[in-house]
Amino acid sequence: MPPFGHRTRTRVLADRSLLRHETVWAAAGTPYTVFPMAPEDLVAHAGGTLVDVREHTS
Image 1 (tube, one colour):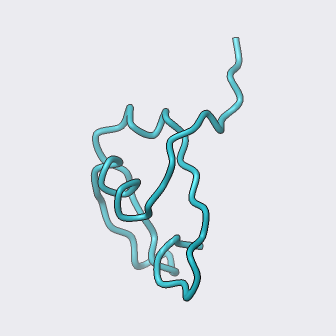
Image 2 (tube, rainbow, N blue to C red; image 1 turned 180 degrees about the vertical axis):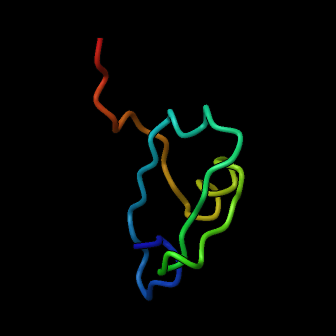
């Protein structure tokens, strides 16, 4: 579910490792509505907070 268009503010967490990518593909509700964007832009538009979400493996 995208963090956009809600009537109330939602808490958005984004893993810091997302920023390692030059481009990420965001979805708009169907497999046919995806679009590329810079991960920094995605986090900014979503009002996200960067955190360590993923599990670190050795």
